[in-house]
Image (tube, rainbow, N blue to C red):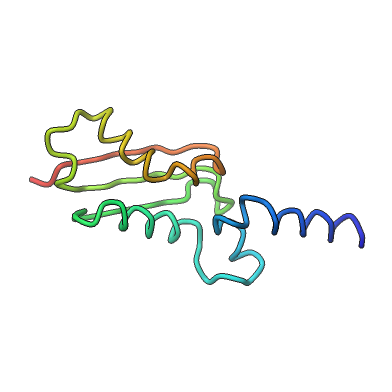
Length: 107
């Protein structure tokens, strides 16, 4: 086994692959990391009126802009709203470089 194969196998066995962030690169899943994050947020915030996830790192999955509009955020301060988003993505945050989160309560 050459070094490239060893590296590829270590990626497949590692947390990035387990959490779906590299699966689409290896053809084992048809979802992008944006779709994976959006699906997690839809599950955690089922009352959300709007959820947007944008990979701002050129497609490598290192940086994301996230916007969520939900009644779930009523009576929560902005820091607590953002904490709820970070908590929902706890496992994914370990795998990416950064998030820019915006939340809004529908009018």
